[in-house]
Image (cartoon, rainbow, N blue to C red):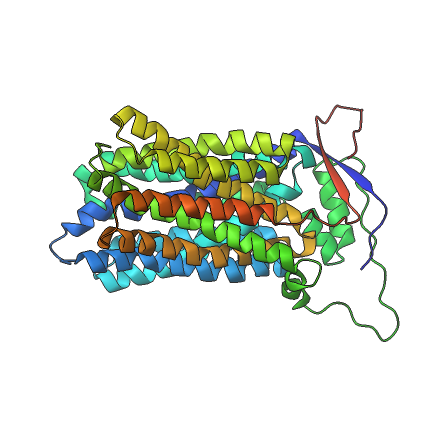
Length: 452
């Protein structure tokens, strides 16, 4: 399918802001559901009715991750086939309603089942929200807007920690989990205000709908991309082309190094989040409570995502990612030395920026790198593979904790993974030029048009 010459889509800032806010709400709700298990884990460990062993507690944590792996794989692909908006709302409905089921669960097996099913929705939200954010953002603001939208993830984890702090003593762990179902009331609001992806409509040949939506959104200068009709006897691309494009000769090298770097990033995120407090305690450090660590780690990554997004838009995504993965590894290594609690918290905050913030910028990079017709698929599959890193992170940390290696090796291994992530990003080739459709962020009353 060929495209028309360069068009400039002047998207009002109000429209961009509305898309970002709707996606932010979905990501905020997901962040709560991701963080809630860690927040209630001490209470579950003391819950006499279930009498869970440490191994069983660890198993409960893996159910949602397995679901997220599957959800990112299939829902990201479905968003390219049936629509971004539909799959975002379906994903949100899945993980909010299953939180109510998990809060009610009479046995740990049923609790784990609801977490597994909820993970399908949690895994699907990120690739779809990423695609929508990228598509409705100006090229020079995409990384910043993505960081702004994705800050909801870290803030959701913070909300889970705060809910555990204030609700747990009064209502128990079930009340904390049940709060994760509350965002289901947001689904009708998001349905009303979130627009469908114009690029999705174009990719399906629904030009009339795309043009009507652009008019409704007051997108000036919008011209539908005109598809070239297939030659006689030649069929349009089958649905599976949506998947095979990222493994084609043109994108295979990029796909491999994107997957490696994101895999390493999630090893850092989940490995550090699970084991860093224990490792530092073993090394003789006084970090304070794990709740304080969770708050500092998450808040720093939320702020860092905005700063790194701004820098990535200005200086280039690859450069910023390489530099900050390396700096994140350096921050981890600096924890080897004896420090005060305040200094350790600063290094932990730096590690959060060098792991979570870099990985979210990397996810936005993936969504922006591939053609619009496979954007959700490429992002979802990369995240799905990276979930193996999320599962591996705690296992690597557990292996380190159970080994007879000196404590310095703990930091060296995770720092080495950060350097490996930086190296993989450095190997991603420059994107090959496509016939672009520029999206320019403007005020509705602006008459000046800037094109990229």
